[in-house]
Image (tube, rainbow, N blue to C red; front, side):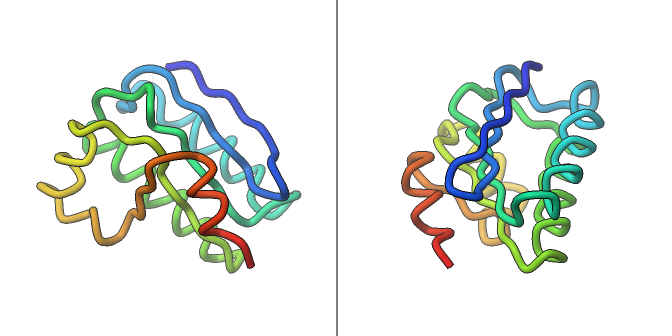
Length: 112
């Protein structure tokens, strides 16, 4: 998995390319934790190039969300495919992990 980080208006935008599985979650979690608290408290994860998330990937998203919440921030997922939306619905995480259509919409929803 390729992971790219960018700061946009004090929001960390994380772009993922590839499947979010146990093989790639450690780096994502470690780097996300480093960024939360340093310069930002909010994270947007661009999921538009992710086709599959396994159970460890879902757990990692929840851990990143908890990390944001500890700093009074929030996590948003942007551009998730229908497959990812279905995974979130089947696992009953759609109500916990807020998804938006675009990065711009996700960032706007985080305006404090």
